[in-house]
Image (cartoon, one colour):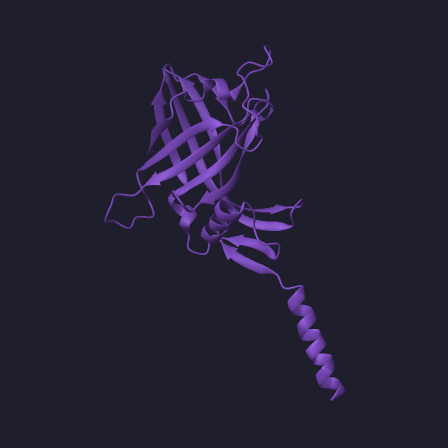
Length: 197
């Protein structure tokens, strides 16, 4: 009888320290509805390969400039939350009309991009572009999949540039006059359609 009691206590204890894995879609639903993930979630997995539709190299033109972004999937561990998650991230190059590079993500002094989460409500992935001039932006990406088709490789992607939603403050351009701001080179229009290259 004592051995059954010990086994029962061990089982109950292990349940209280259980780790839980959820999908990218489930994480998006939790964040949109509750503002956070349940405390027992330790992994976010792209089990359904949803993020594959975002990956690849995309290009678009705007305001006498050309942007080229390469979106890739990565598995990232967060020391802060103890969370391991599949996410997308991107590298970018912005050119003038003569194909001269104005800014690109290879220059780590300009800042960096990081994937945040998938928004289940509108099939957009939210990323943060941390600007070295303290003029960060929120980037939303959404692949266009023609109605009535199932395609993991769409040929168009929507790119939306918004004020930084994560910092809670709207930053003014050129706060630091001697700083090269990536944000100053991003599209000022609400939405830009990119093509797969």
